[in-house]
Length: 141
Ligand SMILES: [Ca+2]
Image (cartoon, rainbow, N blue to C red; front, side, top):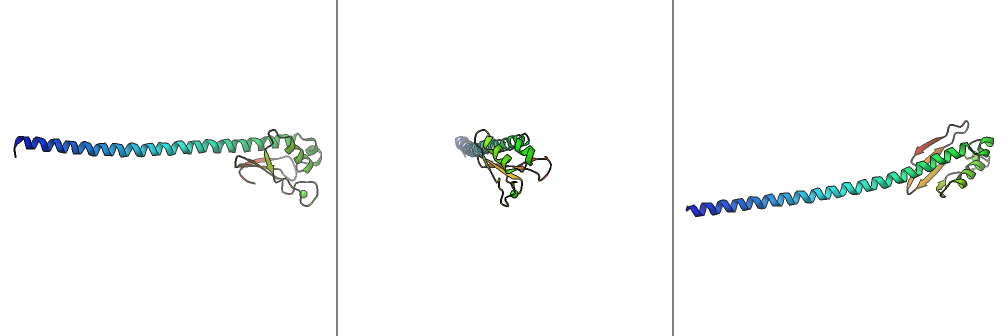
């Protein structure tokens, strides 16, 4: 083996090594970028979820608070259909409030559950049959 030949093969193996390193680095950074993108996306989705959740819960809390100060509710009870409908109509921003119903016609909401929807998130106001211990819960009723 001549000296020159040795030098050339060393150089070639160095280049080959560099090539491998370059490929590894490129592969890595690609993957890292993808992961970073995923994290960014899920953070964005989380933020959107929280906004929706927050809005639904906020509406639910507002509903509960105004129900407690509603005149009809004070006179007829918190499950009074008149009170619930009035509070629903008085809510700012015309939120999606449902599940207020009186199927047996006694003038009171049947299950005391009021569903609030906001950008596909839900919150539930639970009105007790007696007493004024209302509750707000995240998610569907
Ligand atoms: Ca009823």
